[in-house]
Image (cartoon, rainbow, N blue to C red; front, side, top):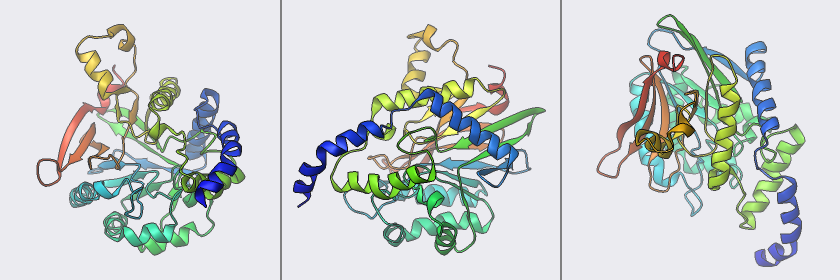
Length: 337
């Protein structure tokens, strides 16, 4: 039956792919990010909040793109759960504030009830941060339901045991060593025609378009699965941020870690003095968490602590889950580069 439906709907869906193409458009992304940033600053609480960065003892761990599923063959999070739970246990014990930066739940392919059933331990681990008032949840394109579902607040309270609102973004701001540091955090799907827009388009993508693609085994052409789109999308995020004054940007969405505006490969190229002119004028303003659904079980994220920003990885390839710092720099040094 599925093959028959796929045959009948293939041409219309190919047309829709072109119509709702997720290829990033510079003007749309720039406009969406600017509007969100202004909304957080001028109307706090509507789209997001400003969180003090310089509060004594405040430390942040930012993970994104868990894509929690139902332990079936399409569940990319299943192999990463061990590292994720170990990481959350560590950061909770160390009193970090946890920012879940979108696509925490894979709600394009599953219902919330299904995801909740198969991820009890994970939700409990996240909930421990909320009990300390140290959990910020941001929605992405694969869990748009937290934005469009009128019952979202009740669902979140039922899952975590306390009130929680899913936001579109947050700004971390404070003075460190006499310098004002401002960090804008959001999932990064803003401006994507297939993931961002008015309420109707969000409903269409979340409730009709994405499930249809999943059922018919048509892989959506999104940055997470397309190397070219990853590069283009990260570049546009960087371009927008580089035009802002004294602002750092942290996103997820592409599943590709970026530190100081460079991917791991680009940093190797720079360190080996290859293509040096290409990187000479890069501003260290854009960061990407990577994801918590790599097929080898590793997870990556961004730490902000002790006046530093770090790209970290948790891996259990050589034993119990272990934290590794991949990149690190002082926050105050970024404004000097």
